[in-house]
Amino acid sequence: MINNRYEFVLLFDIKNGNPNGDPDAGNMPRLDPETNQGLVTDVCLKRKIRNYVDLTQADQPGYAIYMQEKAILNNQNKLAYEAQNLKSEPKKLPKDADKAKALTQFMCQHFFDVRAFGAVMSTDVNTGTVRGPVQIAFARSIDPVFPQEISITRMAVTNEKDVEKERTMGRKHIIPYGLYRAHGFVSAALAEKTGFSEDDLSILWKSLEEMFEHDHSAARGEMGTQKLIIFKHADKLGNAPAHKLFGLIEVNRVSEDKPARDFSDYAVHINRADLPSGVEIIER
Image 1 (cartoon, rainbow, N blue to C red):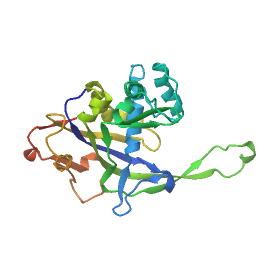
Image 2 (image 1 turned 60 degrees about the vertical axis):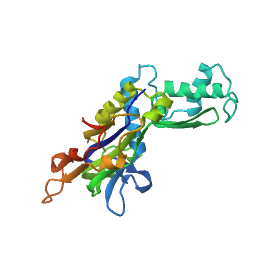
Image 3 (image 1 turned 120 degrees about the vertical axis):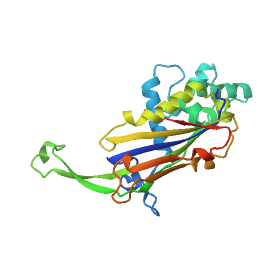
Image 4 (image 1 turned 90 degrees about the vertical axis):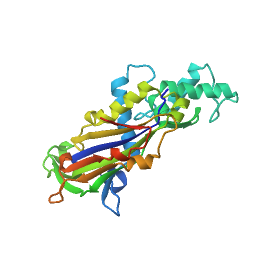
């Protein structure tokens, strides 16, 4: 188990790409319509963490991923019943509280993302609900971003009958550059309930640093973590409010003379003078 509360600030950027397209808007980059700042959802970031853990820890017991692409959740939940030699009833947990608890504990022990992020597993094969110790807020770009719609063509055709037709036109959306800031939280009190450990925490930090390195695509060719700043409290309950700690970190443009196109166009300032007692800053 972990013995300290944590908060963290993650700074990541993208060049000439789309960090998190909105399927309800033609896959355009997500925007705050009032400020034009870019947004990346918590679900998107958690997906990348899951993918990184699955890639790097697949052969380690206890690091399976519950919420996988095309996963059948009822089948995932059945693993707990099989391990406890129990038979499931549709949508019901066992009436015996100890048996119900054992099912949920199995899911926490077996799946990294359940014990980290929590999960609602009350499907037809019910294994309960878990509130996870690790939470991440939406990421927001430091400055407004300016989406561009780029025309593309496909040189191949699908059917032989179309070989003489003009090549298919398409569209892709990019932003020239965006630096995003996300806030995250790790609760030691909730970690105690799910079994989230120091080893899990180390893997979480590693995934936040490297998750974009294994997620490159045509839309995210140059996307990466630039800085991870961690606030470590002296005990489980913490020594200062999270919002006051986040307020100690300022990210500002170095110059307003030209549009930002690189992380070097920003300066990150940490106000260590006002750091509350009992809180340590770790930069990665």
